[in-house]
Length: 155
Image (cartoon, rainbow, N blue to C red; front, side, top):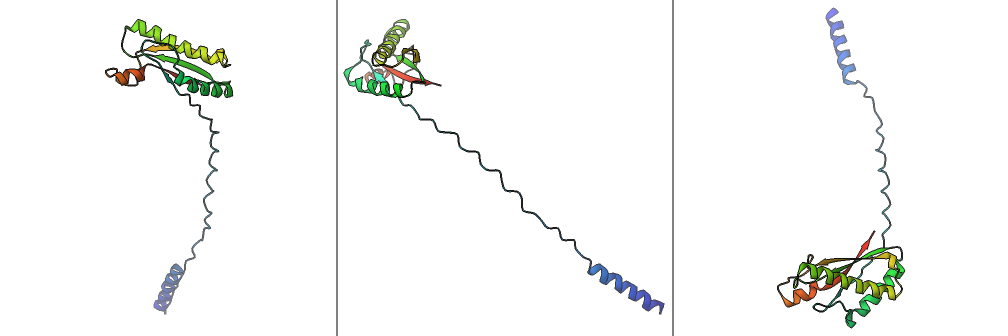
């Protein structure tokens, strides 16, 4: 009888072990991701086309007057913007001469813009002379492209 009791206890332990209750943990879904930040407002991009000059000249060519007139309208519309007018030359001539020629070109453009109503306080001029070519100074076409004035909108 003791063996039966022992056998019965063992069976009871096995049955209880097999039927052990699992604790069910209710999993909560992960919190939703934070909302994406709103995109920054897009500023209107200001594009000011540059102009080109004849060799050793600082006279605005008639073909570039419409480009400058468009710049006038843009700059009047964005009267809060500061603009740097950058004069450039080709590599023919001395550095000192080209520096002065680049400045004469930048000033010619500034004077035109001011005469058309752009606020002079928003315009600065600088000359890079021959130091920033955009094309090969070894060709006639390249030199023509380097004789230019460009606009840089300052933030």
